[in-house]
Image (cartoon, rainbow, N blue to C red):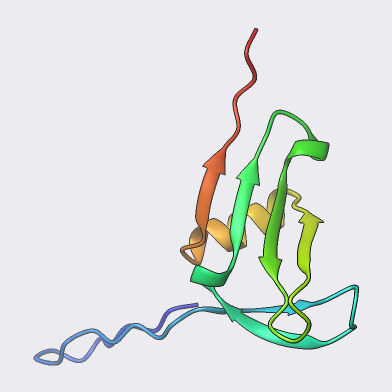
Length: 87
């Protein structure tokens, strides 16, 4: 995801992280930066998802996020919203 230089005397270089995504509406495939994605973590599978706006057709896309997706998105710097239920 990120690349760091291990050569002494050189500053570390971090490559921007991009995620591959697809739109279910227009079927376009593209790459999105971490800033173009949003992750919501809720109390159940139904309330845990990631979302983005399709850069091709403008549709709002919401997809379920399992443990591996959560790990990749948070590790890549995607803004995360933790949803809490009131009891």
